[in-house]
Length: 248
Ligand SMILES: O=C(O)CCC(=O)C(=O)O
Image (cartoon, rainbow, N blue to C red; front, side, top):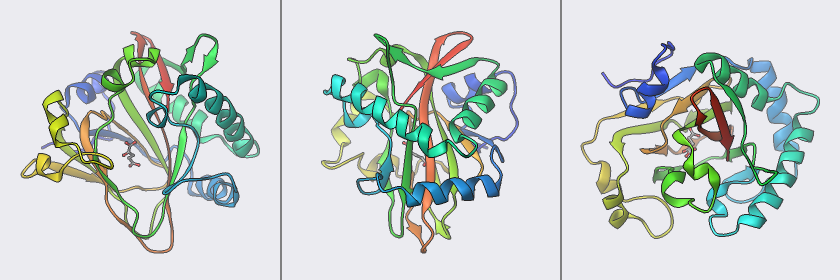
C-alpha cells in the first residue's frame, strides 16, 4: 500500500526519491505550545503579503530575476530570524530533525557568497486551496545552482491546523515533460492528469513535519473554518552524499 511512513529506515531517502513511499512524517518536532506561540507572532506580523498570505522569498516567483531573488532572500531571511528571535526557531527544528534522520548535514544553499532564501511561511484561510502541481527546480530553474542538486525533496512543517480540510493530497504520478501540454494558464496542471491515479492524504497536524518528493503531483485541499492553516517549508537536495543544501 502506498501510504506515508513515520518510521525512518536507512534507505528512506531513496524510497522517497524512487517513489516507493509517498512521504515521511516526523511527528511532533515542535510542541503545540511552541507552534501556537510562533503562530501568534506570524499572524501579528504586518509584512505577510499575497493571497494566500505569505512570508518569505520563493525561487518560483523569481525564475528570471536572479539578482532580485537574492536581495529579497537576504531581506526575508533577516525578517525570519527576527520573527523567531524569542521563540524556538522552526527552521532549526526542521534542519536538526532532517540531519538526524538522514545522517547528513544541512545548511541553506549559497551561490557567489549570497544565501538562498531559508523558507517560506504560508497562511491558507477559509476556502483557500492549492491546485494540482509539482515542483521541480531541475527542470525550470536552470539559472540557479540549486537546480543541479541531486535527489531533491520538500520539507513542510505544519504550525497551525485548520478546523477542517487543508489536507495535502499526493498522487502516485511523477511529473514528466510531456505533461507540460496539460498546464493550466494560471497555475498547475489539469486534473485530467490524475484521474484514476492512486492518492494518499496527509492531515496538516501542527508540530508534524512532512518530507515528500515534490515531483509527484500534489495539491492542498480547501481549508474550512476560521482557523488558518499555517505552514513553513523549504526544498533540499544533495550537494554530496553526506551534505544537503536547502532553499525556498
Ligand atoms: O503545505 C503543504 O502541505 C504542501 C505545500 C506544497 O504544495 C508545496 O510546497 O508545493
